View (cartoon, rainbow, N blue to C red):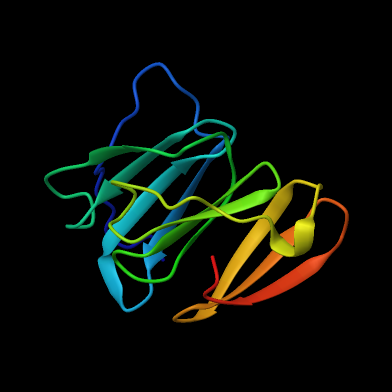
Amino acid sequence: KGGAWERVLVLSGTGTAGYLIETAPGDFDTVYLVDVGATSILYSADAGQTRWYNRTATGTILAFAAESKDVIYVGIASTVVKSLNSGFTWGMGTSPLGWSAAVSSIKVLSAGNVLIGNAAGQVGYSTDRI
């Protein structure tokens, strides 16, 4: 069944192979379009219907997760960096357990409870010390 589709964004002159789309849990109007391998994040608070806002991470994004419409995490090199305002500003970041391998995945389990995986196959758990 095809359903009804509507175009909400076109990125001119770029491919989308490096992009991932995330919604905020419990708020599907909040959408993040993340350029993995770059620093760009596009953010919409209305499901992309009228406006997308440009956000810039503090380094090359390797992983991304949304905890809420405001709280997001990015993996940059071997650190995890948190924003409390949809990527408008960023915290200092932390390297889970002193890792040196690149962060490869982030999964928010619940508010402040985050799993982080790295390229060396290690997994860490945080209770919001990021």
